[in-house]
Image (cartoon, rainbow, N blue to C red; front, side, top):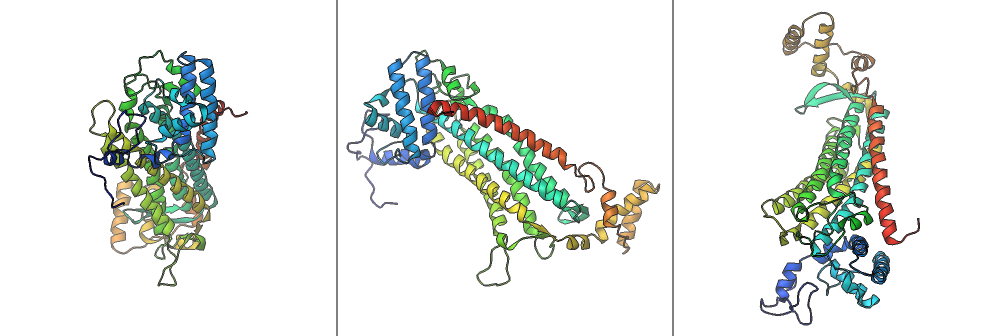
Length: 467
C-alpha cells in the first residue's frame, strides 16, 4: 500500500466520473471505488453483451433511431472484439467497467457511447452482466460435476467386487466395497448437480429496465431486451432486482458449497483410506508430494487442499450472507462487496472439480488389504442375519451375538462371493445398479446441452457471429 495519502479535503484534479458532475475527493474516490476495476474486468465481455441486448430493447421501444441503433450495435460488436483481443481494458481513469466501455465507444464512434446508458442504471446493468456471467460459469461447473459423477461411476464399475469394511463413527461397521463407496459419492455429486435447474430459474431472468429499483420514465419494452439476451423471463417487479442482490449470489454459492462438501468428503476418505493404517486405497506417485526432510513420505496434498478449499468456499458464502442479511429495501453500496466473494467461490468450485475429475481415475485399490480387514466385529451383523434366516427372531439373534462377541467369540468369514451375494438389494454391494445413476447423468447432461445451446444462440446473434 502506498504511504502517500491525500488529505480528506483534497480533490482529484481533472477527474470527473460519468456518474457525478463534481470532481470527487481523491481519498473518498479511492475508498469507494475499491477494487471494482479489478473485479469488473471479469465482467467486461458480459457488460458489452448486456449493452448489446439493451440497445435492441431501446430500438424496439423506439427510444433510439434506426441509424443510432446500427451505430451502437456496430460499436459494441467492435468493443466485444477489442475486449477479446485485450485492447479494451479498464484503466486507472475509469471508475468501473461501464465507464471503460462508454469511453471506448466515444473515442472511436463519435460520442455515440453517450447514448448507450439511456434508460439504464448501473444497478440493472451490473445485475445483467453478473447473470450472464453466472449462466456461462454455472453451465461449465454443472458439466464438470457430471464429469466427476461419471468418473466415480466408472471407478465403481471397475472395482465393484473389491470388498473392504464400511465405517460408522470412524469404526468398522459392516462389509462394504469400493463400488458402494464410489457410487455413493457419485450420487452425492449428481444429486447436487440435479439441483441446478431449480436455481436456474432465478439466474435466467432479465433485470434490465428495473434501473435503480424504480424503473425509468420511458416506454421501455423490457421483454425485447430479455429476448435479445436469451433470458427466459423478467424480474417482474422493477423493485425485485435490487431485493435479489446478495440473495441470488448466496443461492449460487450455496449450490457451490454443497458440491464442495461432496468433494471434501471424497478427499477426506482418500486421505484416510490411503494411509498405511488402512491401505485399501492406493495413491499413485503422480498424485502425491514429498517431504522436505522425510524421504519416504507420499503426501495427499491435493486432497488436503481440496478439503481446505471447500472450507474456504463456506467462508465466501458466509460473507455474502452477512453482507446482505440486514439491509432494508432498495439499492445499497454494500452490494459492491458481494461480487468478489461470488467470483472467488466460483473459482474455488471450478478448481476443485477440475482436480477431482483428473485424480479419481488414477486412484488404485488394494483388494487383498480390503478383504484382510473384513474380520471380527465387521462380521457380527452378518452372523445376526445368518441366524435370522435360520428362523431365530432378530432381537434374540442380536442379543446372542452381542454377548458372544463380548465373551471373545469370533465368527466365520463368509467367502467374498457369499458376502456379495447376500447383499443383492438395489444399490448394495451385490447390485450397484449403476445404469440407473448413469441414466440420471444423461438426463442432466441433456438439460445442460439444451440450455447451453439456447444461451449460445442468443449471444451469437448479439455478437453478429455467423451461425
